[in-house]
Amino acid sequence: MTCADSSSDPGLLLALNGADERLQMALGRMEAGGLTLLAAQEWTVPGCAVRFLAPGIRQMLDGLGLEAGQVRRMACVVGPGSFTGLRMSLALVQGLAAATGAELAGLQHLELLAGEAAQLTQGAVAALVWSRRGHVYAQAFQRGENQATALGLMQALPLEAMPEFLAALPRPASLLGGGLRRNLAFFQELAGRDPGLFLLPAAWDAPRPAALLAHAGRAAFGPGPLEPLYLRASDAEENLTDFAARRGLNAAEAQAILDRGSRTA
Image (cartoon, rainbow, N blue to C red; front, side):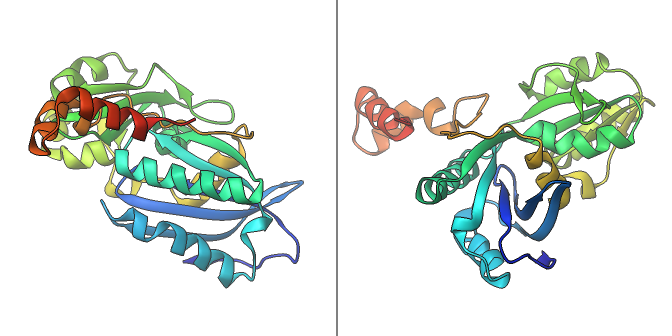
């Protein structure tokens, strides 16, 4: 955990990213001149983020002698990314907000991931997030006046569609994210044929905590609720008939259970 001095009565902003393998949280103090990073924690815990979510927040607050009620704004990555990580992190911040009255904001994962690189590089930056089964979530950005500017819509794409996606981007084009790392040999082959493609190192696979907090500071806050951004159906939905049969259910019964679990109101 990294931390800095806290004030006696800060207005706090909590930012949370549970959309990928690296669970991230950052706590900052809101001030007239901007945000001051107070503490941040990160864990690479694919599939196990729920064990670290609430304890991690509690540890940051306790370490600074602060209470959850002092967190006036909470921002959470809504997707696209891990279905379980998104559900768990969104449920936690909405539960905390219901208890404390904090305002909420949703953050888009691909914009967050590309933000710093787009400001530091020429041309385009393609953020790639792993989406299982030979797919990635993809969106391209370029440098904007104050933050990255999208060059197109976010998409869930099979790897075989990536050459066409990348061919449409201005050069040079830099690639980053877990979708790149999980399919590195595939993208190395593409870059070997295209001198305008650059594969950024693993340090760019997740945003820095300070960048997560800064991105949250620019978000639009309100009473919520926050809706997850999935882009594609979950494995449970795509294989519903098979899953249902293993549990002695027909497809209609399983769909009704899935609908109840997905309901937000």
